[in-house]
Length: 81
Figure 1: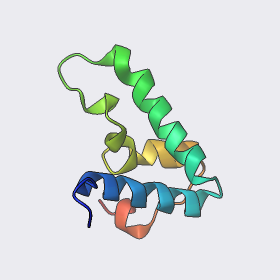
Figure 2: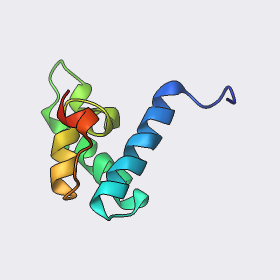
Figure 3: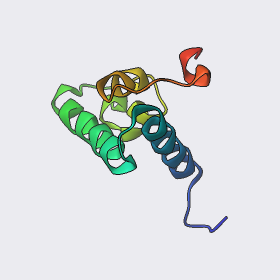
Figure 4: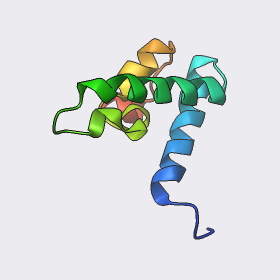
C-alpha cells in the first residue's frame, strides 16, 4: 500500500462503495451526502467534534442516518454494531 493512503481513508472508501451498492446511488452521490451532513453539523459543535467529521457518517455512529437518507440497506455487519 502506498504511504500516502491512510487506513481511515481505505475504510471510508469501502463504506462509500458499500452504501452505494446497497442504495442504487452513485459513489459520488453517497460521498456528497456524507460531506453535506458533516457540513451541516458545524454549527452544532460544542466540545465534541465527531459530528463534523465525515467518518462519523461513513463508518461511525451516524452511519445509519446516512443509510436511511440515501435509502440504503445496511449490511449485517453494521446493523449489529
